[in-house]
Image (cartoon, rainbow, N blue to C red):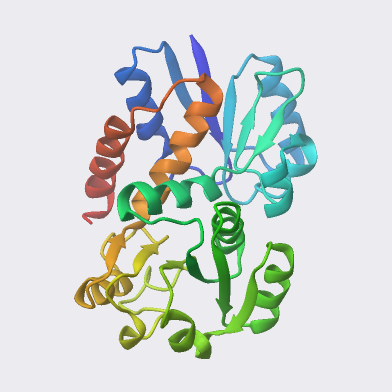
Length: 273
């Protein structure tokens, strides 16, 4: 039996186990997905122990995405983003990857119909999710504008992303006027019925992805739908980053439909979304 899993602390909230278990069942793979909660001082030992025990791959969640980067050999994407959310033990050395960037890209393309090469994209937020999304969009050929509450963070991130620019939130109206893609990479909308984007800045022809997935229908997505925009909820980004990890570990196409059903069933059971 193959073993894959998740390392973080805490991990009881994670939606990764049902997604990956559904994938194994759909493809008749003899595997299990388990969770691990090491303390920070035991993280290096945990990674070494997983490798020694024959674990095939690990997802990494908070608060260890940055710390794990220093314990494995990272690929170019993870190095630029500065965080690892997937570890592959299939080679001579453990390798670290970041599938959040590809997860956002695949969600926008597959569910939003977005053509990213040559698109004008706006990313709201310059934290960890914003870094991954901005790099993913730029790698796909989009021109990226990053808007953040603290403009200095937006400008700093833009300096790390090819061709990107940093802006204040007050500039969103102008930035979105001719934009093709908008991604909310902040947590605004998770705890309260509010949006980080003025409703009147949204328009038809825009593809809007909200990384928030609880609730699935955020204020931003409701406003975007009312404006005639195409909307993509945050569960799609979560799904596709998991699919990317599955494909990296197994070399097989992820059974996206099975994984999506398991994810949304768990979301409904847990959060009544």
